[in-house]
Image (cartoon, rainbow, N blue to C red; front, side):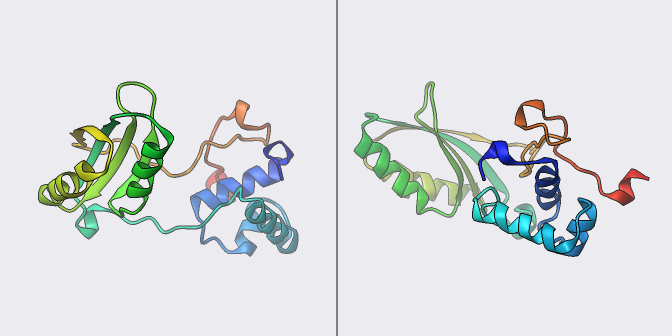
Length: 177
């Protein structure tokens, strides 16, 4: 199901699932004005086509003791395929790395790392990150406060497609009253 084949009901389903992945099929069907069987078929098609790639539970890092959030810029000596592959494989193996992006600009990679304390960050940088072959520089910036964090992608309202997005939230019937 290519992106262009999504109709307004598919977009509504995606919006509701982003709000609450644990919503029952019956409640989802009601929210998008379908009967349960066609709704379930649409959800399965969205999953089979990897538009819905997985369902997760989001935890509050502060409540589980992960209080240090850091953005780390990493530059490599050379941007050659084997150096990039080595770095990326090393990063994929680390649970404290929440996100990793290959970048343009001054640094080659931008990492978002979450750890329990500064000592854990030091161990990650000194004992692991700095030892990855090809790493030439590491610059860290501590996040003082998280102003905005979301996991839901901005979706179009009305099913017009991503270019005409207005709202990522599709209110449920109770909220409209």
